[in-house]
Amino acid sequence: MSEPTAETKMQFLFALRSRGVTDAQVLDAMEQIDRGPFVRGLFSARAYEDMPLPIACGQTISQPSVVGLMTQALQISPRDTVLEVGTGSGYQAAILSKVARRVYTVDRHARLVREARQIFDQLHLSNITSLVGDGSHGLPEQAPFDRIIVTAAAEDPPGPLLAQLKTGGIMVVPVGQSDTVQTLIRVQKTASGLEYDELRPVRFVPLLEGIGKDT
Image (tube, rainbow, N blue to C red; front, side, top):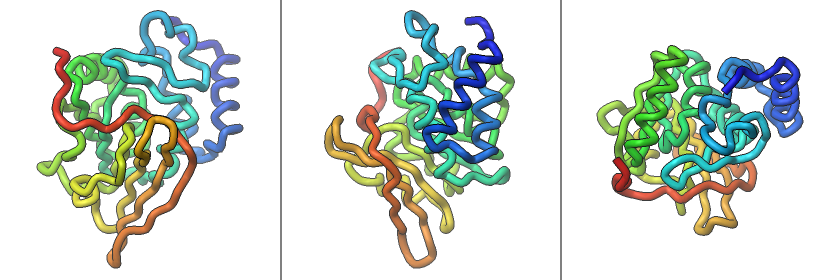
């Protein structure tokens, strides 16, 4: 897909700001990372619209404003290591790579991980490690993490992921028991326990256990 025009990029960033993405670091990352390569096939012409779009394996690429708001809610510092559960298209991980020191991203679909890795290589994003696995269990061998982001909806913030979050760390996760009623939650882990903030209503695919059947 061809590079977006300056006007398209300006409209894209304006849409993000108008929907609450105000953090300068996050906006800069979203200006640097072109969404186009992450949207393939029939929907590639709609890459710069603020809407979720279908990708392979029955998954979706989130609308850019939600990507921006989730990244903003994490309050990432340049020294942080971030775990992303649900690589999907790879777009969210690419944005994270511009604001964090290192990003680990895991997905249950090998095809999605393979395709995301190709884009990361093309964009020279060398601080992303992408793995095939059951993200609901996190990555114990790389824990603890400063920040964790989950891009699929769980009934509750997953216990194994909370256990892998550093004290002082933040996790952002959609929570809900159905496709229609989900809430984006920010969990902060303090020395005295967990603090929860409800951020906004969202719609995500469900967080599933196990490895996908695709190859």
